Length: 303
Image (cartoon, rainbow, N blue to C red; front, side, top):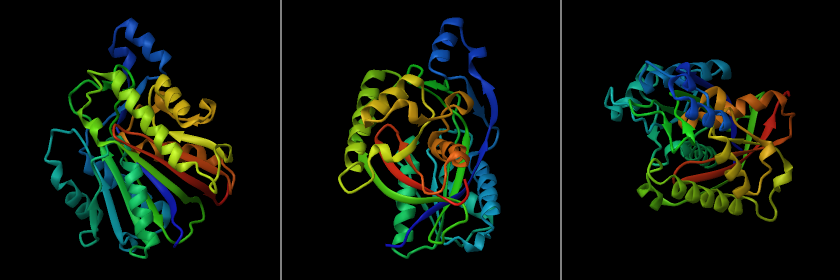
């Protein structure tokens, strides 16, 4: 199987806001305990944010858009300003890639990055594509951004990266990927039944970890850090416990960024990269409402 490498991640974030200034004192104190504070609100449509991020990804990689063999585009935006069904076409045209094959990846909500990585890795491994541009971009609508009884504060963002057969100077070697799925979770509204949502998510993470950590593969202690989504402190504690991981090794940037849909892992992985020496392993713990993925990553290049 052809090795796959993740590199040149970039992102576009909306203007940073601070939620506690918009809520009552009791709620503000609860959010402080959950380490929920900042979020990003964008004026741009999701596809425009994605174009800016993708241009930066190509710049960082030293590649031209013509070097991309496949685009995988994920958007589950609740943005009501435009018909997002045409966004992939708008994105490709604006990026200067009107003839590059593009496929949509959806139905996994904030866990779309797991599906993106798996699909991109498989395309590279099969020899169908040498360089895949993965894209995730979303914006919230006019509903309250604090969702799930304070488990997450939604942010507007886009993140992009390349998955390629060629080894980059710096980046990550993509290792094992295991996904657990429960499509019945679609019927649960976290705003109405938060306990059921958290319980189902915990079971999904438990199942993903059970399938990922099997004999013959690296063990939990072989991973120097765990990169997770930007969720509330209590949720992160539950997820770590469900996966059999030490909460102290779980890295997120909840207070800084809020929950950037499926972009969280790319942002947080880039944040831990400078302190991760070549050869060290990092675990990506990607969670959503019905789709949970563990992905092993090995650091390449200079620390």
